[in-house]
View (cartoon, rainbow, N blue to C red):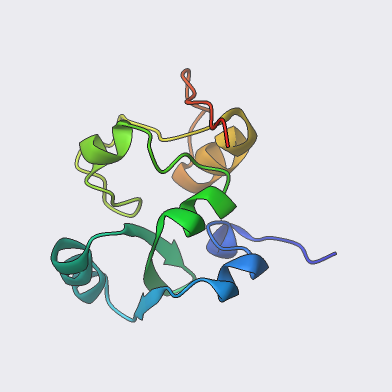
Length: 110
């Protein structure tokens, strides 16, 4: 089994089946996010904007109302005190953001 590093934490192998938009700069990814919607995430030294299916693949709930509070941007959230998380993704959230796991969780019923 492959080991996941912090650089690749927000991407899974199954996400290759999803049409993601890839960028080498954050500015380009953010422009695409604002123009076409989606959810912005980091991957190594790149950025990608994914769809609802990609968010679900990461164990996150695409319908979590906190996405609006962070601007659908995991890299530079509007409100950095908000964590979009499910019980399964608390470890991912805290490792990626470098802080304790969030105190709240949104359950994904799918």
